[in-house]
Amino acid sequence: MQFQPRFCPRPDCRSHAQGRVGGRRETHPRVPFLYRRRDTFTRGCDRRVVPRFLCLTCKRGFSEQSLRVKYRLGRRELLPLLFLDRVPK
Image (cartoon, rainbow, N blue to C red; front, side):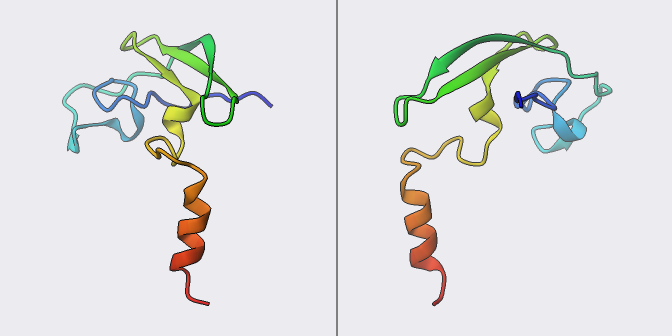
């Protein structure tokens, strides 16, 4: 199954989720999200190939990784260890 983005991850884009800009209601109406698959890149941490897309509304690129919870996580392998350390036994 191929990944299909549902919205643009850029908060200042008119086709961003929730129809908000910077935490405020936007003054312009939300437009339909149109995108095009652009290319791929290989992640350095696990050598996984990640697809890249182009938002046709704001003309900016993003990847599948941009829409994930772990987007800004520097060392993904530490997340399960941190979780197990913090959960009461």
